[in-house]
Length: 607
Image (cartoon, rainbow, N blue to C red; front, top):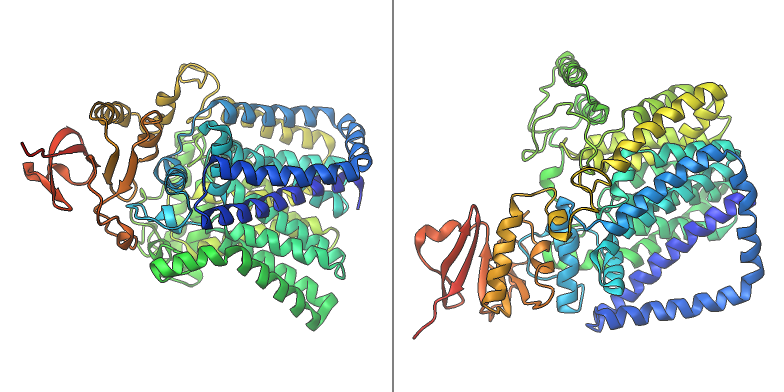
């Protein structure tokens, strides 16, 4: 293994170990009901102490590693400069912008606030069941950073670090499988210029987090295949897979093609001895995920807490054709309406040839808007990647005759397997582009190899297009723009929080004002299943009233506090109760504020 691959691999393994340590620390603190600033600082003080001991022990080796980076950066200077601009720009956004992603406002960040309030990550009553059932590892990282730095911009760093770690895993994978510096840099630039990756790198979502663990798993697969008798790679692979499963539900789908590829290749070397690494892997996966699975099973009767409404209801060749074509076409968004309409029309005709209804409810998620190839949008929920998809498709065709020449081509086919599994199992919805991110990142090594086989002139033209179009999501991120009248440098926190839902800002400011005026100590939240909630927490940073979900109508209802008598009730689903007071736990509450669906009720005082 070359030094260049080793340095990147060291970063990947460090992030894997830190994630495992963070998970252990979180669960220990949770058992002690010490999920707070002091407990988390103690956890990382222990980690830092041991890392300093290791640094003192291996200081000469570390010094040589970093000195060796200079020659690497002297090659392909233009490519490195482009990468530096992307990383620096996205880092700047992550450090300055306040979180404002829709899912973050409803559950990613809200669950962190509940954990801090109760001092444990145990399940709690909530009107948004995703807060307790979804894999929590990315939010555990947010919890640690948010608590350590006391500013919610630090939550953005989780995805940015995962972005950087994914690029390191791609670099290392290309280098260990024989790619030169140019090939590795081309693969990294393919990944770094993915619009969805750039946009999410400054958000508090979790698609980059799971992509990092999946890419790390692929790296460990290749190392294990190259060195089948080195048991350490089995352990690292199992850890990466386990952490991926604890980060996002899509990992359960995406890991399947990767593990099939691993089993097929390792069988050639180990035969029946492969049972041993499989047992190791199973034990590590169970150890890492067991507590979360047990919590889910106790609460919902299902280990993963999956939403059955998202699953396809029709299986076969025709549903597969429909799913793959729709998921590919939605990535082809352009800024040209006639082109988008033509692509939508073509997709509809293609479905007609197969005798499939484009909008068949068995294959389309009901709450989603109907299928169409929409306008190009630099938004972390919708951004497509037409250039990257075309390069991946070209790599697939090109690799047919070169499949055996380099294992880097294999990543294109693993990406195809991931897409097929995804399309087979999940109904189409308009937000799928963000879930595709791990697929295109997996294809990066093959894309880098493809571009390296082009003439230098052709590769430069393609890179120019990739880097040029990448400037749009970098500078004009729809949720967190660097420039323009909505720049993150021109607005304070509240307008940033509500960038994706501006109509709510005045309502939440008024609700916050009433909470402070009435000096509420406890607030009951009778909200819908996808209501914005996080801003209600951060707008009360000084008074910090306790907030509790009430009138819960899902599996967490038994966890609702039966003795709670809140000082006020906020709701977006009671709808004025026909003008009558509402009763909760023997106390009557009257309507004191209403704006659209949002209402605030105060207790009736008895003279």
